[in-house]
Image: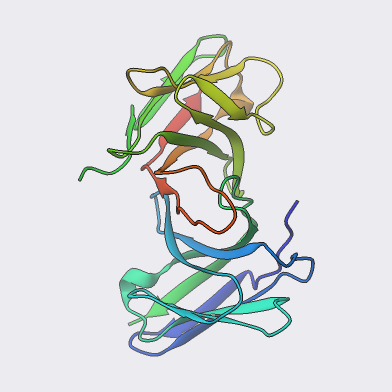
Length: 108
Length: 118
């Protein structure tokens, strides 16, 4: 299994940045790092992915450590709609191996 | 462009009955994946299918579960003789292309079917 370690839960305030960490110390050199999130009572939703370089898209930024053994998902200005379980996954994009994720709570 | 559609959204079955879960992938997507989420647990991969082919069924239980993705029509996840332990949310996802190194295709998930076995 493609094991990752994430905090069980995190809390932040609306309109503040949020940094969600993930350790993936057994990742291999060609494995992608993906982030998905699951809002309450919904299916997972793709957030971002990266390989070696930091990545930005309209939803978030992904900062990847130089040794690739950890990464951080950054939500620049959290909104109430960002409250979800965030999953850090590594490996191919074909068979996603979900861990327990981080439950993010956003306070108004 | 409609997203991934799953039906029914909620399904109640008695022990021993059959459950049929349907998934229509996004337009233009020919790859379908099924995942199961047991109560208070994370999502677990079950099976990956292309049209008329099962590519990876390493996550499927050995008995009672089967999946298909025919040339025409939706993908079907079939659970025969359901037991209470089958109660879960079943999510279908689709992607446009087959994943290969150097090319990335994210998976688009449907809203899920919540199966309750009485």
